[in-house]
Image (cartoon, rainbow, N blue to C red; front, side, top):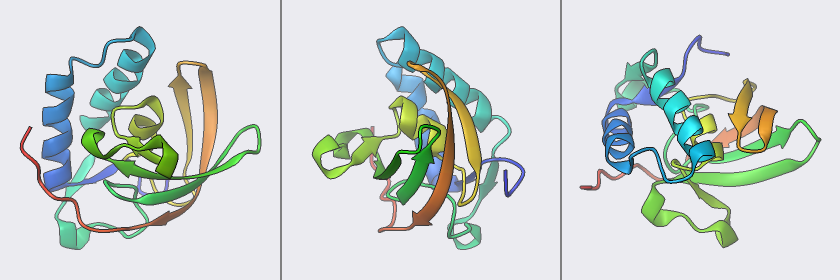
Length: 137
């Protein structure tokens, strides 16, 4: 891990904690496990101001290019749940993939326990697209 722990911007961290608290960790058991793992990672996350946020860290609205261990390359955008759109490759933070990626950076390799089993993901590129807007939940 490039920065030693996941890195989150303060407002995004607060939003994420709130949304995890009210989500009840989702309905299906496998997604629950992923979100509980994320909640545990938040305990050791490095929280920074927006101005201190490295440009290559995955955050809300980031566009991410990654390679799965089977060699498949994917491009996606990490968004809040209400903006998810699978047709446009916009995935929610509350999905197993979204919860696996938040706070990691370019060149990080993640081993995450997905519903289909453990998978290794290599983050190839991160681009920031738009600012996170605080939304009341």
